[in-house]
Image 1 (cartoon, rainbow, N blue to C red):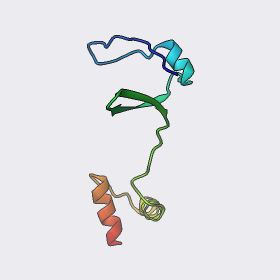
Image 2: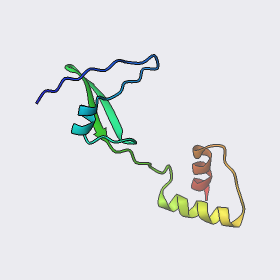
Image 3: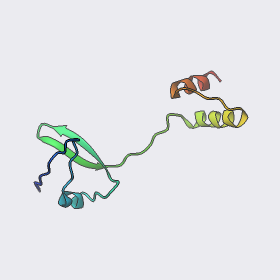
Image 4: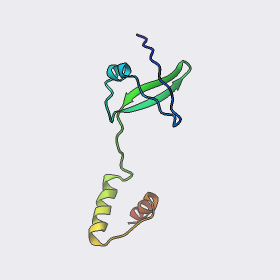
Length: 87
């Protein structure tokens, strides 16, 4: 099935996905989409975005223990990971 719809790009590079396409892909306000490029053009695909923690569960346990004992601040994730690795 090939469906062609058109839209204009704004000065900010934004495009409104035509209503017919949004309905077919079940896209609602707040939905996430992924863009891909192939030899045939641009692909638009519904997707789910999930957060991934920069720390393992063991690292979180250490962090929670440290936070409850005495507050220690780190300037970056890497600095915190380095400190945790030294424990």
